[in-house]
Length: 441
Image 1 (spheres, rainbow, N blue to C red):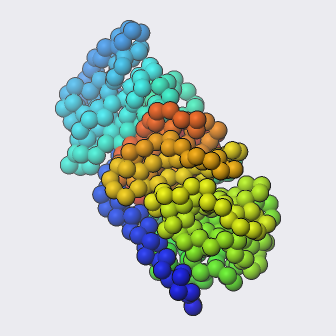
Image 2: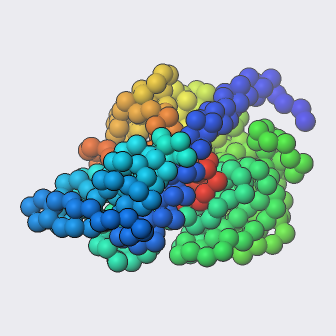
Image 3: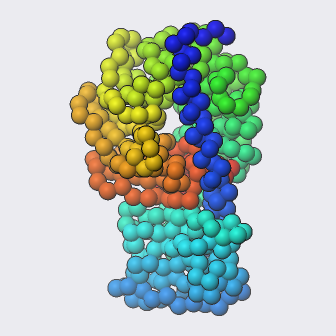
């Protein structure tokens, strides 16, 4: 393959992005696997567990006091306050004062009856890590309710394991009935029901971070620079949602396809060195705009939007072709981008620790607004009608902030997401622990 000189210059930043994803997993993956697996499997058993341990007493707040126990294998002072207490905890696995800590986790608590924060922790065999789920809206769930996909523990929704992947799951996408993801280790494109059920293979292909779904197909990219060796030709692929032989839609005009977006007639690709467009049924990819580091793209009725990570800018170009326009500049290594009817939102890790930001700018242009600042490496991003969600990779957490601005809040911590998606009721992510996860909003 022949590469143009200016395109070769963009490759180091592409490698840097892969290094970030790989490097952070070394620190977080063991803790995240123990935390998520334990909280999802142990806490999903019921709201109150009593396993060969004495009950403990916790006092409530204005709503009164109550008695409930979650002390497993010798926890000494594990308690759950019921009826309006500000803080309440559940100890699991023998820690003396470990709250929802599995295997000796240090400290993690579950808030009851409208607490602002709530968490469920799980540590490794030696103790340490903590995974926590927060009631970011200040509310909670009712024990026994179905709004948490059947798992409500002490008035806090717990994460649900939709699938345990054989390795490292990467990109994620959601439609009305299923969650889809890709595999770094196997190159498989997978799906599972969002209501729970056995995962199935949609197609066997390549490791990729580019994935999109429509009512009629699943689409993904295969790049020679994926970071994992594979022999699948470079291009854009599709398969029926319920599985089948992959169709190679295009190779011509593509060199390093990464992210992609769909409309009714076309596929738009962040080719790292350019923003490309090809027919939805396949064909030659044409260049809409040159963009160094254009890895993630989104599309609306009139324009394609993307982040030029290497050029530290956010841009748009008409889907019919024409001149591209910079909407914001000076945002170092900007990565993910999402859209609503009026604004473009993106994450910027920044040049240093805890200096990243989550930002928005009007689609028609204007002054960018920082929705959250001083963030530790914000990366993957998702959007619903009311909130922006993102992953702080250095902190191992998912956060959210209102689209109109306000205080940000932790949704869950002790995780290591590779990608993030939301629908009207839940948050989904692929985790470096090897799990595909769901958490009710």
